[in-house]
Image 1 (cartoon, one colour):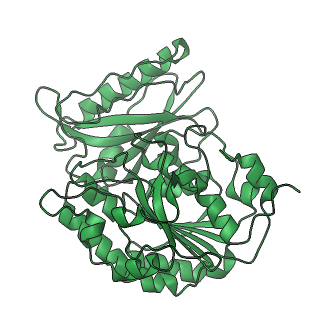
Image 2 (tube, rainbow, N blue to C red; image 1 turned 90 degrees about the horizontal axis):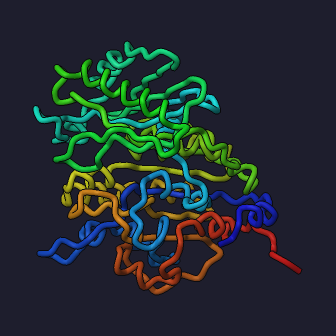
Length: 401
């Protein structure tokens, strides 16, 4: 593993523009009746043509066999070993909505969810609740008061929210209440250390108070908490790589990831076309751009193979506008795989494309899982992404004499 300290020593300024395009949940698995994945099924002439001029491969977000969350998957792409730099989802959600976290705050992401009369979770996302309804229900949760702690509740988007606990002696060493699948009741939050006992009691009381306030709010009659965390204070991309970095993302969590590593989050519209227009508007002001799009992951989690195919085809249609920006280095990949046949994130390696003027293309002529497996990058760790981009952008000095 190449340490961040080594990269910091090697990094040097250059005029090159680097663009990392993350198609969330990109990778998939074949349908049994067609033997084609979503990406292999989609009509993607622009991605295929670009792959023919690029180096391709399959990236491993965390480690072989490990299904990553979006946080670890992105941190790897930004150059941080996700097994070393562990960041809880709560922090990403809080930063994503612009909440001013204090060092001792404990934040957790929550889903509005549906439970049945027996208290079992029957929908972890409450029918993918509209954001406006989320805001109305958050107002109910903001009335909860527990002695000795301040509680802040914020809408993230859709069925997602974030709760922040502020007070003396709080700990983030807590288990989640989200059972991660339907058919089970929410889990009690348990302390992982003796010091976290009081915090666990506070959180469980909050959940009970929330359930009482939501009992008539079907389908959102429960909340599921996960990712308890404090702000980890990571070194920034500017400090590590001498980059002026910017992010163009729609969903709050991905804005939070960008802020966590020191990127400027650029305001943008809802569509990929809007996001590319934002890139164009700010192209001269930054060296590194992170562009994120979410639809493929959402379709995969919903088990909607056909919709994921359509999303990938829509992305392909926007690729010429992205290439018109003429980045010096372009990586197109995902933070993890989300096969529709599994309806969840998975451990499968992710298709990966690297284009730059400073490389010799491999023999790959299509952008898909099995095609990329034959590419020149082979099977490699996603944490190599930043050093590959910096090297091809002529932003790394020679190592050693």
